[in-house]
Length: 465
Ligand SMILES: [Zn+2]
Image (cartoon, rainbow, N blue to C red):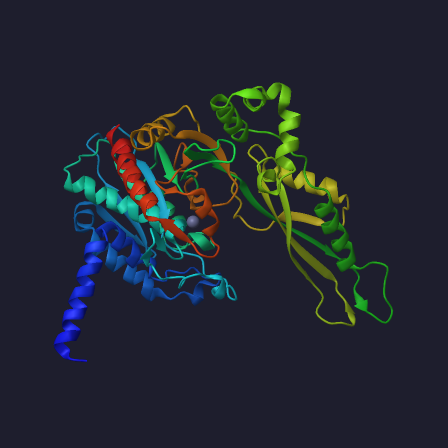
C-alpha cells in the first residue's frame, strides 16, 4: 500500500480511538492487556508484565507518584502514603491487588474474546482482571490523581497498598507490606479491602442497588491428618493399614458436616435486608429469635448460601504409599476448613478429633497460615464513612453488611487495623459477577464510570475525617 495512505489510515484510526475512548477507559484497557498472572508455582512468574504495569501507572498518574511517598515491596507490590494534616488521627488503609488468575487451560475456546484483550466493545471492557480487580485498583489510582489535581488536602493519612500475588496467598506482596508497616509502627483506624462490591440488584432485594460491605471473611484453616501403621509386604498383609485407617477418618469427616448456625455478620445481613423489605419475608428476617431455625434451613439447603451458615469441610489432599506391593507405614491427608466467625482453630481441632474418634489419627494445623478474622464493627467510623461515600454516588443503594466466603489479602493486615471492611469502589452488574475467575470476565463501561465516581467519593470522604 502507498505509504502516505498507510499514514493517513493510521492517524485516522488512532484519532478515532482517542476520540471514542475516555482516557480512564483507555488506561484500564491498557493494563488489562498486561498479563500480570499469578501462577500457583511462583517460579513460573513472568516479571515483564508486572514491570509494564508499574511503568504504566507511573506514567498515567504523575502527580500521585511524585507527591505521595511510594515504596515498592518485593519489587512488584506498591505501598503509597498520602500524608494527612492531622497527625493525631490514625491513618486509613485501602488495599487492592493487580495480579490475576490464569485462564484455565482448556477453557480458552469458551471465551467469546481474547482473554487479555482489553478491548472496549459494545459497552464493555473485556478481559481477565476487569472485575478481579484491576477496575477498583485503577479506580483508586484515578481517584487519588484527580483529587490531587483538584487540590484536595487529606486530613487523615491514607495508605494505598496494591499487592502483586494475592491470587496465590499474598506471601510476597501483602504479607511483606504488612511486615514493613509493622516495623514502622503503623496501625490503622480501619481498612478497606477486597470482597465487597456495589451490585445493580440482589436476589433478596430485587430491583434495588445493593452495596455489600463484608464485615469479616471466613477463617481459613488446613489440618493435617496422619497415621502410622505396621506396613510390610503386600503378600502377607496385616490388619493394621495406615492408608485404610486414614481413609476411614477422612470419610467420617466428609460424611459428617458441621451443624449449620446463624451468626453475625450473616444475621446482621438478614436483619438489614429485613428492615428494607415488607411482608412475611421482612418479618421473618427481622425476627430471628423466632425464625432462625427456618432461616438456617433455607440457607443451608442452597449450595450458594450454605457456606454462610456452616463451617465447611473439604478433603483436598491424600498422600500414602510408594509402591503397589508395599503397605505404607504412614499416610497423610489435608483437610481445608472455612470457619464461621466464632469458631477457632482450637474448637475446630477438638471437633475434628471427636468426629474421627480414633486416637491413632493425629490431627494438627498444617501451617501457621491459619487466620481467624475478627468481625468488624458496623457502628464504627469506617462503616459510617462507607455509607456516606455510597450515598453521595448511589443515593438509592442499600448498604448491607455481610460475610465474605472467600479469602483475600486482608488477612495479612488483621493485626494492623482495628476494623477490616471488605469494600472496594466497584460497581458491577449482577450478571457479570460470574466472570470472576471464570470465562468472559468483563465490566460494563457505565459500571466502570460509576466505580470511578464511587472511588473518588470514597477516597475524599475517608481522608477528610
Ligand atoms: Zn481478587
